[in-house]
Image (cartoon, rainbow over all chains, first blue to last red; front, side):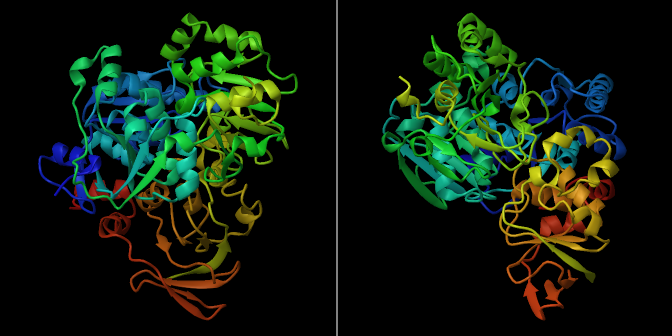
Length: 417
Length: 165
């Protein structure tokens, strides 16, 4: 019987054929935590009496959610993580390096890997055909120590995307459209697998955006075949030998297949307070936005900044709207500086914050006031997400975000050109 | 047998409503964090909940973040089980890993304040106030094995490894 990407990766990893529905104990190729889940991970690890890591080179702690630390308590958490890394020899990615998921994509994830992270957006590495999933601190502490985890091999929903995207319609609009279609629990416990012409032609940046948000439909993983585009990324990152071509079998068995015609999509926005509360940007015209947030592990990559800069060039941010920009990693920041995008954002009136999670989870660097609305390129718009339960978060693409920054109201990017 | 009062919540109770990111600085001070559990969904919850009580949600309870602090502080508040129509994947796993039962059943007819009696072995939820009996979906065996030991870390300490296949 043919295999889905999930079944292929797990079967290759275990050296035997596995099917959806099976419970497996599986080796882990990379385990990580970040600074808001890492302290509990480290305490569970130490408290359990574990002495050493299964593989210190493939165990990583990222200081990215509170980077740099806004208060003494989080500074103490950072100290704990730095000291654990010193004592065990695990890898630490300190402040300024960027968001864990971006760094995993740049330097660590390999096609066919099994990855667990104490962060729900660990699914992002599915763009490189890694079976990557978010877990809690206890699960990751055990993966640190034993180098393995358990899970149920998920059934797969195949998303087949044909034709080409219209101008200024992006991967973000596609994934928001999909979540609107199937619901915030439409793929709970399942794998999402993406394919079709529009996906074959899509950049790694676009695939990372989509994989990142697979969890917003409840999915365990969001997987893409490993192809020439994956190979190109690995070559650019100086690790071409890690490329392995992986694609699903033609006769793979899917729970269902959803077909989408990319050419019919339009800029899409998720309204407060759930990600599946989607609507077309043009149908929200007039909704006042006080803050625009461009960045995060969803849309803080060079390609996102290139698109945003092309719209913002020689324009100004609306006087009653703030624009906050957070590159996903140090590499993105440096490339965006070289390309002149950072200058465009600053000259237009934007504020640049360090590579990291920034304002996304309401911890610092862009907390909203009572009654204020933010249009963000991030992945979540739950009540209270950006630090204030009396505020409102809309989600959209980088193009819609900067178009909105220019007009001060939700705007279809095709209207400002 | 578990006994207590029902605290009823809406659909889509996210981890941001349970322990928001704005309180990230309290995650290494769990007793302090527990004073805020679910406050953005119901500011009176913490002051009213008693040991043994139940959190009763609707669809997709616990969606969002992987923060294990969410089920952990619900348990610290005294809650003995969570009932919901459906539960997000990571939250479900985290709750079991913390020894907190999560029971999937139709919660529509359970009301705020109802007295509930739960028989984990028989798979029943008795709403004494409403005089109805509900059946919850059996907890998958692998998770039941972890729950029986009181959570993942005690499970691994006892067995030294995963013995779930």
